[in-house]
Length: 366
Ligand code: PMP
Image 1 (cartoon, protein in one colour):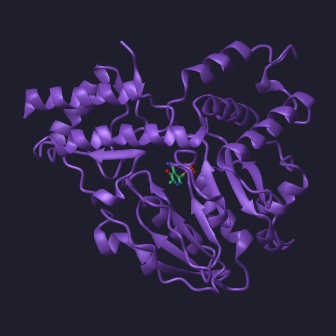
Image 2: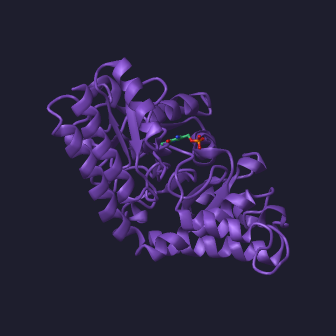
Image 3: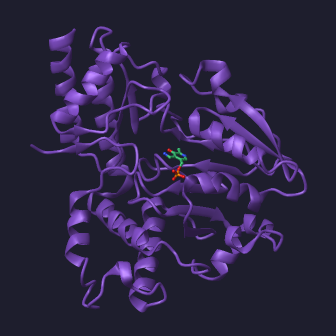
């Protein structure tokens, strides 16, 4: 029986990536050693880093005036690292709250007060109980702010902006958490000042955090910032200010190459649409047995949340699905219900298997 892993992250990886890592585990490319034990300053590792960066640049069409870093600390560290780097002198920071992660981001940035002042530009919790998204035109943002921060796909709540918000030329630089959707659909990088993403969903394994930053913003990264948090210091040392997460970068490089073999981001986006549509159809055609509370236009293509409305039945669903080879379908810990995370590496066959299991479970319990 094939096993499909619907975890929200760390998440499923392409089998071919894991097989390559297995083959190369003891001897990477004739070096006689493992990437895991290799000096980060060796030619072999520098080449891995260089190619990972180049492949990400080409997959996302990242313009030359953007720099790329592979840092550690996860997306959570970015909530405050980005604020330390881009804001100063009690500047205002505009935070858009659309779910669990953007709420935590605003809270954590708030701890840097009075170094900066967080202004809530929109609150999808107060407006819609996180079942819909505040339209970008309604965000209360100011040109004077250091930046506006939002999360493009809320992993726990299952809401995602479609299309990608386009802000006017009088908007402050846009900082966006792409953790649970990077590389899942084509985007225009130039719409953003900073894009960051934890690797453990669409990029690879936990440990690496990708930061893509527009060059002109680096002027703000002055010596007032402790070195380990300072983007400019990391760039000046070519990502080697401290020991980088070498193995996670290697795995990211393998995932980027796999994505190229799948036809790139536009191709995978079409498949992602199909996968999400299949699950939402299964929910919508269940006659109310399964519910998804999200406004249709805001439904995430990456994290599909649903429940039966009965916690005991939900628990049974999750347990029986696991026995049938579909793992990690429990919803976010504070939200309950079910969540199917269907990132790039989840094959269509996995989603089809889940959809038919859902119909069968309804037939038995409906
Ligand atoms: N932002 C988003 C959108 C996330 O989904 C997560 C984790 N699931 C985080 C931030 C926190 O990331 P990390 O655990 O990598 O620090």
